[in-house]
Length: 487
Image 1: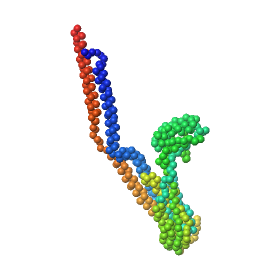
Image 2: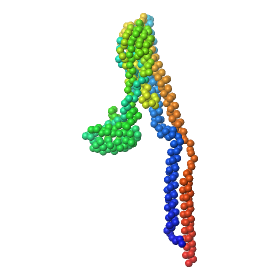
Image 3: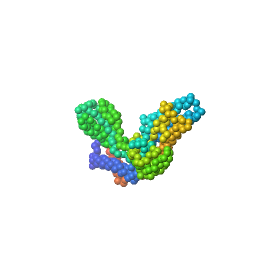
Image 4: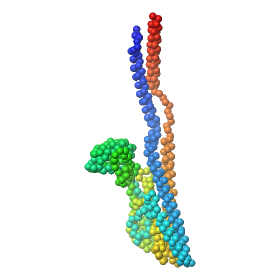
């Protein structure tokens, strides 16, 4: 006979224990099923897994390259605008020079024209030396450099392109340096250290040794991407990666921690280790020019060339030379360098740098074999400059216009070919990347494994049994209450 009481019976104990086991098993099976399903989804399409994992890094590289395209466009556009303004002044000089060489021009008119020429020359100098992003644009400091030119042999060297050895060499990490005293920290400091991986809060105390401070910073390397070393009174913080994309920054919340880069900033950037390309020019003049503007023959870097101006196109460089009239024989070796030019990253390839050289368009440089625009200043007082019979000024201006046109053609080619091509390729890459990551794998039907279904059905049966026992208990108690009331 079953004993009726307030306590839970042994049968109920068994049912409750079994129910708990079934619930636990069902939960574990659901978790395992979800994990397996997610792995299977990625396993069906590895490209989706790769795209989602690498999307942010690749998008950042493309965005950075597009920003460089925009910057290169702004530099080129500013240079083109400046050339147009210089041409306007040069046309005014030409008009005034033609008036001066006119035999009918009176002395007071000549004086007035000379004043206007001086003003135009001053404006050309101002335009050429004007700065853009803290760099003089057309004063020659941003042009390819020519080293070793003997002007008694080679009158002029014009470099249009150097594209060879400019590349990554010894890239450097971002570095911040803290100076302590007697190998210890001088102040308490709480700061956020941010590196290539992310940021973490570092708490240091006064008089703490630099060695233990370095150990404390290194304990967060997995979070920040910054490692530290201590030597004597110097604590060095260095990014684990090298290159310009690697950065370290410090945001001090409490106390003082003055770790700075070489320029005194609390933010440091790595260095790609770019170095200047330096192709060389060697050769000899075989048949010299008999007069200015006449043809000549020369051997340059193994190429036999004939013409008024020697134009050399090689894999590493494109340049032209103009020799002094009458010079013959070997000329001194010349070295070309892209050390001072503008450099842009117009592709996603690491170390791929595109140089842009901007010529010297100051009055001292504009001109040719007849002289420079600077010779037309009234202060020079050259009586032959505006001689009506043989006006050297007109020849100088024509040579200056030729040089200005050459500079414009170089910039137009850079804008239309190099920048436009890079912009189109990068825009296509960005669109392709965005499209590939927007494509999601098709949703799969949710299929519940058979063992899980069985566990759920068993749980329902146990709950039904417990409910039946509860109802029976209630009925028996009610029956006993009726009997007691009858008595």
